Image 1 (tube, one colour):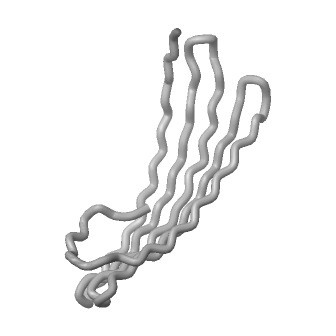
Image 2 (cartoon, rainbow, N blue to C red; image 1 turned 180 degrees about the vertical axis):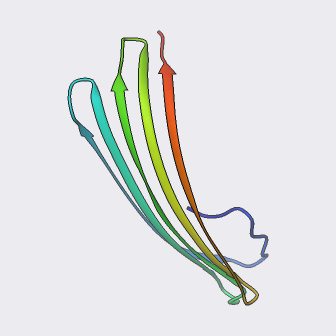
Length: 102
């Protein structure tokens, strides 16, 4: 996870950890979870940011063509740029109806 609003012409040193797991609940239902953590710093100590978050999703097959997916995601961003600090959280909840045909 890296925010895309920094324009600094120096190399960034990034350390990122990501983990995910998927578990079949029934023949039609699957649960998936993922988490990530990232620390990024530039070589001149001008900018640094830390982010972490996770996602939990449930997928249910309704018919051969349609499936229903519910997803919750949380992310936290904390950045420092020239001495100023910015931190914000992001919560997302999605419900998706997916159609697949061959």
